[in-house]
Amino acid sequence: MTQTVPAELDPALIKQIIAAVDAGFEEQCQLTEKVISFPSLRGQEATAQDFMAQTYRSRGLSVDHWKIDLGDIQHLPGFSPVAVSYDNAFNVVATHRPREATGRSLILNGHMDVVPTGPLDLWTKPPFHPWRDGDWLYGRGGGDMKAGLVCALSAFDALSRLGLQPAANCYFQSVTEEECTGNGALACLARGYRADAAIIPEPSDMCLVAGQLGVMWFQVKLQGRPAHVGWAGTGSNAIEASFPIIAALHELEAKWNAARHQNWADHPHPINFVVSKIEGGDWTSSVPAWCTFDMRISFYPGMKLEQVRRDIEDTVRQAAGNHPFLANNPPQVIYHGFQAEPYIVTGGEAAQATLRRSHRSVTGEDPADVSLTATTDARFFGLYAGIPALVYGPKAIDIHGFDERVSMRSMRDVTCTIALFMAQWCGVEKRN
Image 1 (cartoon, rainbow, N blue to C red):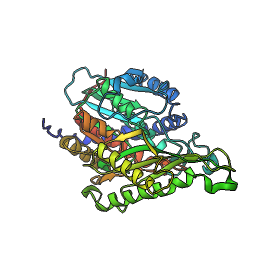
Image 2 (cartoon, one colour):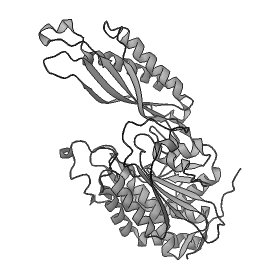
Image 3 (cartoon, one colour):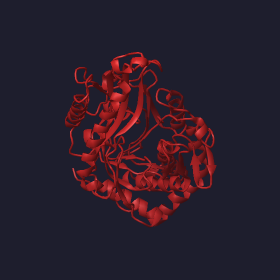
């Protein structure tokens, strides 16, 4: 059903909402620092999720805090295979319900899991001890995406300072598993959470995301023939045998990059195949009898998961066929983690127009449109639930790298934009 764009807010109310964000901004930054301080690496998010549940309850929100059950989601479209334990995979969803629902409902989704830090000596300061320098707030996960998670709640707080609340259901989702599968967001859908629109404040430099690539993870397992290195020629080196297979996969990467998609026509290299892990062998003086490498790849909209897997497997098989040992002992391709379909934002014109108007009220300019070379949880809402999913968040640098940091000015502007969006999209009523 086509939705109309909500009426513009009264200019005086716009000013009051922005002033309310500013009044609470130092408190917002301190809350962001507190959330960053939890080392919520995959499998270690539970304590941080406990904190988020407590934080939501302190706002008077009802909280649903549960452990993800694979049995609830593994049969659903969008599920990605799991290679880690779910013993500590907890989601938190906080719900605001109005006295009288007169507006449109909203999901505000963010993820709590963060990627590993890498060698600590390459960080300026410890990554889970956040610090500020000028406009930048540093710490692992601050940009991707704890700052955005707090921006969503702080937008709600700003309305509260004015004695107002959304006049529609709002669901604040703090999920896990975004960095490897997205199964946390899928679990929210399986639990029945739906709304008229969703905002995912991933770091986007305050641009509005028009599309995102598909992402796939896989491993290639190679066998070799062990031998004493003094007679190395009698063996087959599994580690060195991986090199031509990796090279063949990069040739496929170049082929896909050459076939440009219109959303990434101006991007110099949108498709990326990355060997992210490699291990093999057991002894320095033995020809290695095994090697496993992990690869992350991306692909364009219009490319189906099944075809992508066939292309990968065909490439590996053909490259292995040129190797004297692997030709008779073919490598295995094993899929784990992301099996994420591409997503182009379609529909949701009313939600997009409302967000653009809100951004313009804060910055005086229209937000730029971008297409990501990565994936986000937006795909679950847009592809599998028919919910317009808008990715719009603060400016961040070196996410997944050393000295990850997020612009505090952009945090403030994003919070203002979300608060204005919430007031227009959901409407407002007096607080209980």
